[in-house]
Image 1: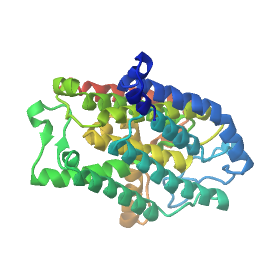
Image 2 (image 1 turned 180 degrees about the vertical axis):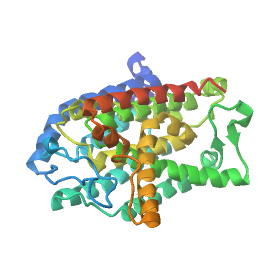
Image 3 (image 1 turned 60 degrees about the horizontal axis):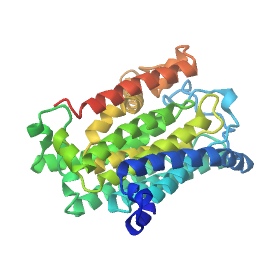
Image 4 (image 1 turned 135 degrees about the vertical axis):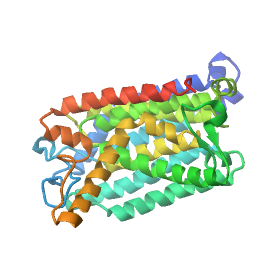
Length: 378
């Protein structure tokens, strides 16, 4: 919105709005301040509507249920579906500060689409007051349809076709960094779809302790902000041997809005949480992170930057897979972890919630630093 003023009005203040860095800073601050202002109002609104978690979460101790959340009675009654705050402030900040373009609208559409899916899932849980939302198959089906639509759209545009038909590999010499050809195209398409779906579900699985998902989203969003800025700047991209992507600079503004909205939500979600993100926010934020990574040719980098998210998702896959395998072989399912996702395993081992979250933050920071180092290490 403000870019129209920058293009049409003379003077230094409006000229500054042409710079991506200025608008990224404005988007971050706008999303953060909006979150601080709207947060108490949204929390009271959710409480008035009784959108709160009164039901007992799934208990991983029950036979056959190996992925349930820990039962923490102190958290029952806390408002959920707080992702509405994140999505609202992110959209407003991005629309105000980002220059309109296909990549910007694509990310925001994915954000809204996954937010709608998560909202429906949360609403079913709240209305029934049990942990059974929509079925896993239905959720994955919608996610794959949206992700496939994103990839098909990028493939259809000549300017973005290579984003989903070439594989960019971090930490390898520049001449080998881009893998192209017939097999590469198939691998790239599958990788892009799995990146969007996987990121959405990984953030959702991580959202199980106060502040954990929000803090890790801030770290991943910051890394993507840097990569978007580099990919959108012709000279820096050439110097760092990063694929140049037209319009990626505007995605840096969107990432800044994402970081600001996640920071603002984190303010209310830190221990003890005043509001939970719910699937409304976690599915949307994960989908947005995955889409941005695909749009700047960095899906493999996201795997590295989001190491905490990857570990959480892998822990669930291994737990479920091993349980089913041993049940077929021995007639009795066995567990690799005390509970999954991974943060609940450490909670069961006697770690306090704040210790688990803080140590996961430290790992997340190390993953973010490793991802950023790939800009120079080739």
